[in-house]
Each structure stands twice: as structure tokens, then as C-alpha cells.
Length: 351
Image (cartoon, rainbow, N blue to C red):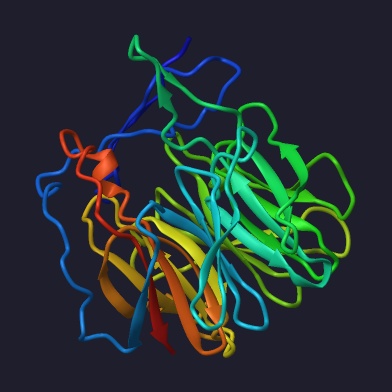
């Protein structure tokens, strides 16, 4: 057995208290504690003083908790997955909500969802974030994996295990049906080629590494350039494919470190839209950064919406941004784990 401890950085990132993990299990702590003087404070309303147009939120069914993965189809259908179960909801353009996939022993979480619409496949990542406590107090976690589901039948088409010690976080899909996966512990981006059964390391860089949580969100531009976020130190990287050899990794200068950058997608104008989870402060935000703007160093950070409760992922539906507000922060605060919110929401904003 081993025990990893994650110390808080000078930037006041989350203090992570790690549960013992088997040597063959994740090197990533999937349950951690926030130690902060204002941890018990809660945010009650989304700020109205933000550039984004606030639209009516979507209230999720009462028995659906901790939304995370979210994706949409060209007809406006939206898919939403849970951090703590493998259940995936399908929301029709007229607002009807049904269960596409109920979850099972092999797909026990849906922390990222991305749609390969031409092939009718919904890809997702399934890490056991909080684990299950046994009667003797031990926390047991299942090995993380990536999955593919048929959007017509709800059938599980593929299950791909992560390398030993790895942690599947966020996903991006290319036009050929290949899947890019950020690994929060092995400091790399994996790639699953169309039809392949095993992951390959697509890009690795020592700057991706961290003793806490490394890479999180990922977004792919149409030309194949990727942007990835480092969850714990708040940095962004541009990863550019090369004709020969490994992709080139370039740090993006920002006017300030981000507080837990997470889900991200490109807007129609080429700017990057992303969530700032803010596990320490509790003040989650929706941001826009024009990462490719020439001649701007550092890159400015625009706040589109603030006072979100643990925003974790998003999808862009036309000119609307749909954000999964997970509200999971209370599970990471001592003595507040049992204060489960009554309802969970998808927050909607207009660009």
C-alpha cells in the first residue's frame, strides 16, 4: 500500500488529502479534502453582471446527481452523464428527458462525453472518482476506462482500459473517429485510433506532471491543434501536431493562473470557452480566452459568468453554452459530505 499526499500550492489550489491506494491502482487521488477557511460558504445565485446572456437553466431529474460529461448532436439533442454513476441522460430539442444508458458495473461514471455523430457513437470516460467505502472504512475504486455507447440503442460498443496508474479525464474526438484522452496522472495525452483496442501515447511533457491532478480539460480545433488545461497549477498548453515526430507543446501565457481549468470547447469565433472549477474558493466561473490572438502576451481572461457551483464541463449548442454545474464541492469538505443538493442543473448562457 502507498499513500500520496497533495500539498496546497502558493496559488491556494485545493489541499488534497489522499486515500491509500493499491500499488497497481491509480496514482491519482480520486477523493480529497478541501481545507479552507471559507469552505462552508455556498454560492446562491449566478452573477448577473457578466457579459454572457443568462438563459433558463435545465433542471435535471430528482434522482440524477452530480452532472459532468455533456455533449450534443447537430439537431440539438444533448447527452449528460454523472460523476458518481454511469447513467447518461438524453435531452431532446423539445426538452424531454430520458435515460439513454442506466450505468452498470463496467461503466460506473460518465465524467466526460463527446459525440462522434457520423458514426452514432457517444464516447466517455469512466473513472471511479469517490470510490466506495467498505464496512471496515477502506475506500475501494474500480480501474478507470474509456467507453463507447451506441446513441440509438444505448448498447456499450467498446471498453478500453487505461494504462496502469493512469486516470482518464477529458476527451476530444477527431473527424476520423479517433479519440484523444487526457491522463491526469501519467502526464500525457493518449490517442485511440479508429478501430484500435489499445491506447497509444500521443503527446507527453514533463510540464503536464503534478503530484496532485495534472491534465484535465481538452479541446480540439478543426486543424488538429489541441488545447489542454493543467487542473492543479492553472496553466494552459497548446499541443500542435508535427509532420514528423512528437507534437510540439507550448505554454500559453495567461494574465493569471486559472483556478482549476476544466471542460473546454472552441466557440465559432475561435476563442476558447472553458470552466473554472474553483475547488478552493468555491467561486466557479465560465471564461473566454482568445488563445490564438496574435501579439497578445499574456492572454487576457474574460469572465462570461460567475458564482457557479463547481462547473466541470460544457458543450456549445449553436450560440449557446451549456454548462454542467456539478455541485460536488461539498463532498470534498469535512463534515459537509452528507449535504447533498436537492436538485442539479445544466446552466445555459448565450454568447
